Image 1: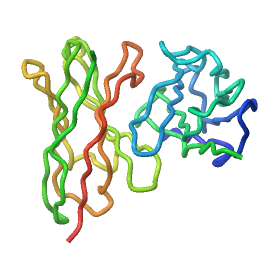
Image 2 (image 1 turned 60 degrees about the vertical axis):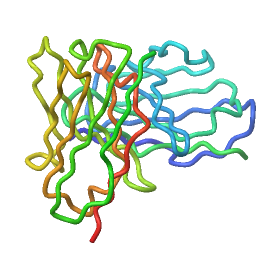
Image 3 (image 1 turned 180 degrees about the vertical axis):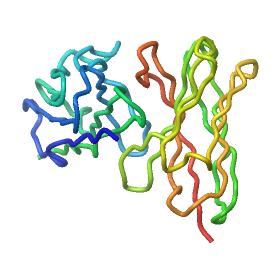
Image 4 (image 1 turned 90 degrees about the vertical axis):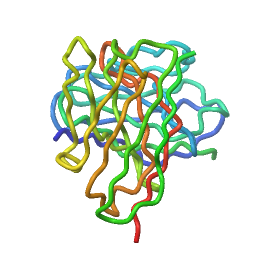
Length: 107
Length: 120
């Protein structure tokens, strides 16, 4: 199985901060990576797919990059609605796998 | 509006069975692959399985943790997806989400989830 390791697992940041979350794959997954945002008690929401393509309706302060085994999700200026848990997910191979999550909290 | 609504969750004893449903609206189900994803209390997301679309013969894939115990089916005429769960274990306790796949096999629409609790 392809393991996805996210870092950090917890992040404390202030409004307006630039935030970067990393996702490392245990083997190359080309650009077959998505990022999801999940708020407490809610379903995940697709933010980014194919590593760097912004899902329709997602604010442009979110960006993604990477290929192969290392990927990043960046929020250019943290807004109140961005405090949530973020997950990466690979679709290179079955079983589909998710990273362990990064919880972004208010400093 | 595209919408997915799960139902069928509840409390079941270990070894029991449960059938979850996902009612879809706002799109043509036969055009899309669909996934089930679960989340144990306080834990991360775990993919359960997938049914591909009509063009790909509705074939299925499963996580090793549920293979042989869970089965995904669909009835496109009823706009519904199902997850039959047998031989349930306490570790199957989770919120179960259904999700629609894009043409590139990313999960772009999710239901609100239904809670399954396996306990004696």
